[in-house]
Image (cartoon, rainbow, N blue to C red):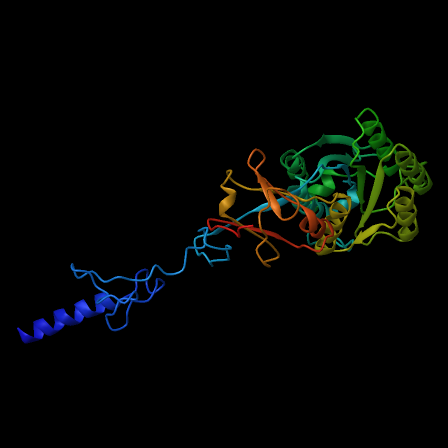
Length: 371
C-alpha cells in the first residue's frame, strides 16, 4: 500500500508540474503556491492548478505578427506570369539531324536530343510564351517548312505530340528524313505565316534551330545543292522588316565556315549574335537563355492548385525575410482569388523585375506578418 501511495503521489506531482502544449505554454504561477496578485494560493478550491496565459499566438492582434516557424505550412508551386510574346520554333529536321552531335555513327541522334530539349523548354515556358512550331524541310528534298502547330497560348501539349511523332533513332531516322536544308524558303514561309496575324505588342519572334548551313540552291554535279546563305540572310532581313525578330541557334559540329554565316543571320534578325550548342546540356542552356531573353518583366506570380485564404500565406524571395501583404498595393504583395495570383508592388516589384530574384517562395497554412 505504501508503494502504491508513493507512486500515485508521484504521478499527480508530475501531472501538475507539466506545462500545457508540451512545455510551450506559460510557466506555473507562484512558484511556492503564492498567487501573483498576493492571494493565498495558486490553486482554487477545486484543486485546479492555474497557469499563465503565455505569449499570444502569432495570429492574435496583441502585436506584430512574426514568423512562428509553423510546421504545418506547405509550399505552393509558383510561376511568374505576364503578357506573353509569340515565338515560332522553326526546326531543322533534315537528314543530317539523324547523325550524332559529332557527325559520327552511334550514340543519340541530334534529332532525339533536339526533341527532348524542345519538349522541356515549351513545357517550362508555355505560361510565359505563346509557342508555335514549323518543321523543315516538309519533304525528303527541299520543300519549304510548314507550320505544324500554330502559335497559341499554353501550347506545350500540342507541340510535344508533334515532337513525339518524329523518328529519332539513328537508323530509322536516316530512312525517314533525307531532305536538305531549305532555310531561306522556310523563313519566307514563317513571314507568310505571321503576315495575317494580329501584331503582338509584347513581341513576335522566330527561333531558327538548325544543324547545318542552308542549301537548296542550284543543283551541283555531285547531286547536292548550292548553299543559300545570302538568300537566307535576305529572307531574315525581310522578316525583321515585317516586325519579327529571329534568334539563330546552331546545333552540332557541322559548321565549317558556318560561324560567319550564323553571325550574319543573327545580325539580320536583330538579335545580335547566334547561339551555338555542341552537346545536350549546351542545347538546353541555349534554349533557356533565348526563352528568358524574350520574356518581359513581370510582378505577378501564378499559384498552383485551388484558391486559398491569403491570411495564411507566408511569402519570401529566395528564402529571405517574410514579405507583408499590403492591400493598399503600395508595397509588398496582394492576392487575387479570381486569377489565383500574387502581385508584388513598390520595391518588391522592382526587385522581381530586376532579375535578381531567383525564386518566389509561397508557403500556405501559417499566418504571415501583419502590416
